[in-house]
Length: 271
Image (cartoon, rainbow, N blue to C red; front, side, top):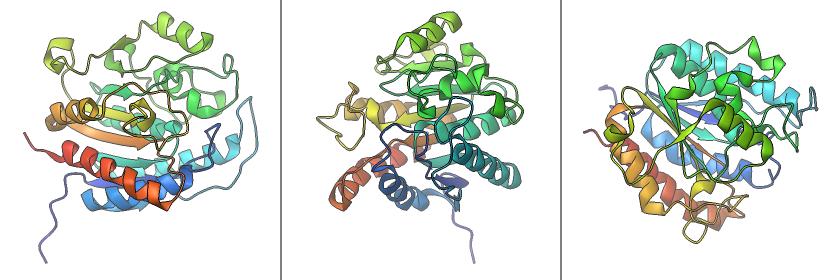
C-alpha cells in the first residue's frame, strides 16, 4: 500500500486544560481540534492526567507535569520533523517548542496570542500555568520543569503577533528580554525572520466578533490576517500548535472547527 503524503509527519493531540483559569470547555475544544488535525498527519495522543494538585505556586501542577513528560516521551520516540499540535491550553506548547528547538537550533517561534503569557512562578497573580509558557521557553520555567528542558530559546528568536494584554509581571518580562512583535501585514523577510519557524496560534488572538469560541475573548487579530500569516511562512513551518479552543457546545465546536481546518490548510500549502 502506498504511504499517504501528509503535510505534517506527526499530529500531537495534547488535551491539557489544567493550566487554564477557565477550563470548562477546553476538553471539548481539544477533541474537536484533534478531529480536524488528524486529517493532516498521523495522530498520537498525550494521555490526560486528571485534576492534579497544586505545587510550587502553580495550580494543578502535578497533572501538568505528568502530561509534559508523556508528550516528551512521544516526541523523543517519534523524532518527527514537522509537527501539528491540537491543544489544549497554551502551556501544552512548551514540550513541542523545546523538542523543535533541540532539532532546529535556529528555530524562530511566532507567538500569536492576545496575551503576553510571560509570567513566572514569582510574578503570576493567579497560579494558572497557561500564563507562563513564554517565560518557560525563554529560560524561566518552574524549578520542577527546568531539569526536563534543554537550552532556552534566545529572545532574538521569538516574536509576538497581536499580543497586547498583560499584567505587571508580563510586561516586566517583556521589557527585560526585549521581546519584539511581528506586524502581520508586513513581509516576514523584512522583519529579520528566517529559517525554520514554529507558530503558536492561540485562538483568543482573533477578533471575537469573527471567532467567539474562546474563554478569554480579548483578541484583535482579523480572521484573514491570521490565515495570511500562517500561509506566508508555510514553506518554512516545522510546527503549528493550535490552542485555547473553547466551544460552549457541539454546535460551536462544529462552527469553530471550520476555521481550524482553514488554518491547517494554510499551513499545508507548499510554496
